[in-house]
Amino acid sequence: MSNGAIIETHDLRKTYRVGKVDVPALRGVDLTVEPGDFLSIVGPSGSGKSTLFHIIGGLTPPTAGRISVAGQDLAAMTDAGRTQLRKRTVGFVFQKFNLLPNLTARDNIAIARYIAGMEAAPGKEFEEALGLMGIANRLDHKPNALSGGEQQRIAIARAIVNQPAILLADEPTGNLDTENSKTVLALLRDLNARLGQTILMITHNPEAAAYGHQTVHMRDGRIVERT
Image (cartoon, rainbow, N blue to C red; front, side, top):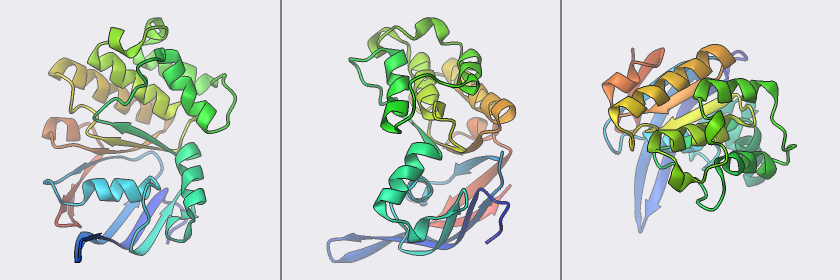
């Protein structure tokens, strides 16, 4: 596998056991992602998008094939190794904001550094990201006092506070209205352009997909096109 790619898969496969039946989710995925890429991943339900994300993010191991993330062989990695990958190398943003309701926005962000065993004070890159997100005046509010768009921006801040090399965004605008969707998508584009964040984004929305550099089309557990 090449040394330059930040993510690379070869014949990646994942099969789930449901009762006595094997259900293939990935059927041989070959994907190369260079540092600083912003890829949109689209496809119908059941096409394997989320399974691919879960494997790249170290949430589940593949059944077969090869995968390298930031120079690490995930297929050979232990559960503990994948946990370290999630803490330091990959950030996640989901459709549901998953903020802790009893914590302020500031503490919701800081908890990611605590879990990773890092010092509480963020670096200058994070301060720049906060400026891009426009949430500096909302950090002392709890989630129920924030709009949906503000909550998603807090969730993105939490995902990048440890300065991960890769950001995985799974339908990040799925719970947002049109205006807030555009704000969040523009934020992801700025993070990619200004901070060099490598971003993979699952979306069903063609307008959202257009924010990426390229679009990867999946169907039946395979990549069928890259445009």
